[in-house]
Length: 120
Image (cartoon, rainbow, N blue to C red):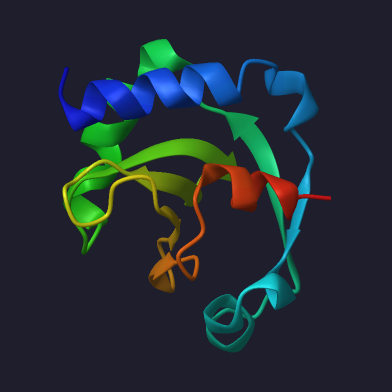
């Protein structure tokens, strides 16, 4: 099993109830880089990407991302922003926020569990 398959299984296991994550809020103050680089005070999750759509979403976002081996799994604030998880050797399990206007931000070394704990 490769890293991509491992990450998709992890997401399926950890994010099994999509209703509980929709409309959750991440305060940008939780992360220094988000707090200083983007104007929003909070990021609202609008959709959990279904596991059968990972490939499609990955294909759509990959050309715009500066970092390889990122799998979008949550959509924020209307669709131009996504939360991603790394599946490469160097970024396996790390969480990123990608905003089409402001770029890609690693969320300070957080893994999926730590990230989910910060959602309100």
